Length: 353
Image (cartoon, rainbow, N blue to C red; front, side):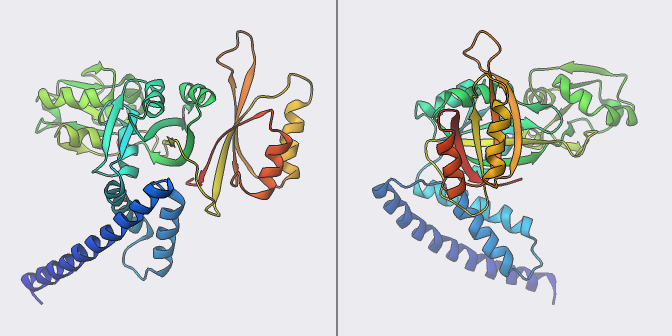
């Protein structure tokens, strides 16, 4: 079979895919009409996870589970926009890693609103200028994002999803050769995260120009043919700067956890995580007794982090806690009732890491 015949087979399959996708969208639109009448949430991470799991279990290859997830997440995102146009606020600027995380979940069709601070992102959803907020909450190298924890303490928005994303840096330039590069733009922390690459390619002696974001670095490199930038892949794409090297960071295990917030709560999926803030009485043994309740309820704790309460002048602390399970699980309902005066519920959502 020659190349033209193989391409004709692909074209025929594409025609069928298009027809089936249109059929799917028509049904999605009917679902959207029902949800508008009942007030149901458009974004249902637990439903999307169940679909991907079902398809992966019946898959006979050669597609991998990761490939199935990538394709269907985009299909889900497009479908949601047919149900209701999606507005997503995120910690900017355009081309940031948070932007990349937002597009990973909400696709190419959604409307994105980059904002200058995490506080502004929360406010955009509170004011109904956006339906969703996407913000970083922790990095496996640098720890928790304090501003996000502070905003969670003040908000009535709920965490509806989480996303763990590898943080990969790209070396991008319009120069044809490395020796033509006279300066490199990036955020100061990115230079440090890519120190080994810069030394190995004898780029440690040229001028480094720190800027406020890796996205700004990509923009400057797009205007300066004798320069390069260390930035995200999405920033290189946004400003049309060719990628010379990918994944140049020293620590290839560097990941950031992002959370998605909105004004609704998730149903149980059977594989959930719950987040809370706990403010305990200032007396000996209060933390021990609180954590003992999780053991007694057979609840697996995943994370605990202390944070100064932002409204207090002294040294009063919240404890941010992640644990397995959904707030509607009987054992967790019992735990919440026992400690209702000490717990601020932040959300139950599909576990993703």
